[in-house]
Length: 240
Ligand code: PGA
Image 1: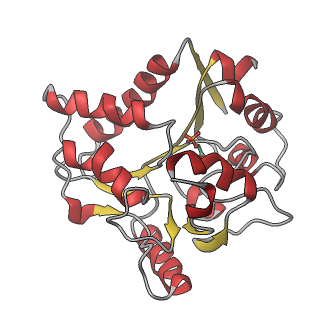
Image 2 (image 1 turned 180 degrees about the horizontal axis):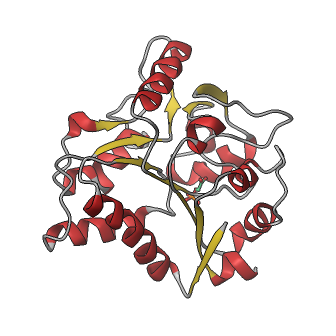
């Protein structure tokens, strides 16, 4: 795993956006694997800036997001579809029809997971996948467990993740208890992966990932199996 240790969040976001921009410039019809959460917001703001300066064109880009709460409607302000529209898609010239998030309003969650998995696979995986990392080492909604799922699936959220996400809802009771998420194999099918981490709260998870061992107690450690992963972090996440 390559490591880029940045001075602060702003630099982390710039470095990440630069790597995404390189892909969009060299392959205009690329597939971008996107993530939600507070970590990648700065990266998306940098991409919007580059687009506004005329440096980037998203007209041929396809996007696939990692996950979505279930059940949740796309209009719900806490849905990941809403997050992506407001933090990125509404501000660049991507064709919304080419932006994909698992559907939190599908009637049959398992069928939606299977559909999404085939769709991502039919694209050949993402050209670059952006990831955040949970305090407990999760990536997307692949939480530490005795065994992990290879493909997109329906999953329950852990207490830790419900607590961490409760800040976005009126109370922890309102956080949906399930999600649709890409599995480990779906994520690892990306040609290139960048994982962003900032702040002391992520240090433990980052250290576990960087130990080089692969363990289901730290799903992010599976990234050690991929040939092209870059950790882009700040000093606090790296040094604790
Ligand atoms: P955060 O979430 O960016 O809101 O810290 C990261 C994650 O859980 O993947």
